Amino acid sequence: MAKGELQEWLDQDWKRIDSKGNIAGECGTSKDKKNPDRCLPAAKARSLTKTERAATAKKKKTAGAKGQQVVKNTKAATVKVRNGGFVYKNHRGCGAVMPDRRKKTQYK
Image 1 (cartoon, rainbow, N blue to C red):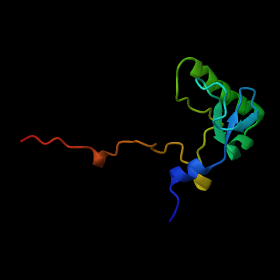
Image 2 (cartoon, rainbow, N blue to C red):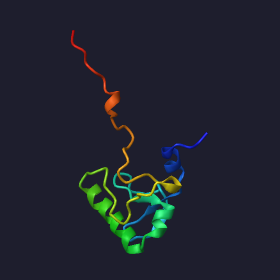
Image 3 (cartoon, one colour):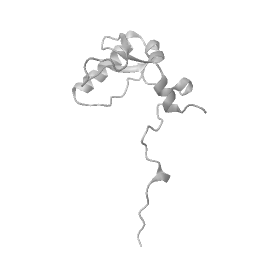
Image 4 (cartoon, rainbow, N blue to C red):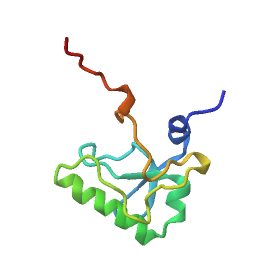
C-alpha cells in the first residue's frame, strides 16, 4: 500500500528554527508554547542560508506576537516540490470543501 501525501509529509524529519537562523533541535521543543519557533523539514532547513532561516523565523515570531496562528513562510522557505513527500504550494489543504461533496438542500 502506498503512503499518502499527508503521511509522507508527517514522516519528514522536522527541525525547529530559532530567530537567529540556527537549526535549534526537533520541532515541538520550543519553550515558548504560546508563540513557538518556526519548524521546517530538515532538508528544506539545510537548503536555506542562515539569513533566510532567520527571516522566516522572525516573520512567524512577529505575527505570533500579534495573535496570528497561521503565518505563511517567506518565499525562500516555502515548501513547493511534490517529489520526496513535499506538497505543492497551491495544493488544497486538509478540510477543503469539495464542490461535488456539498450537501444539497432539496425543497419540496
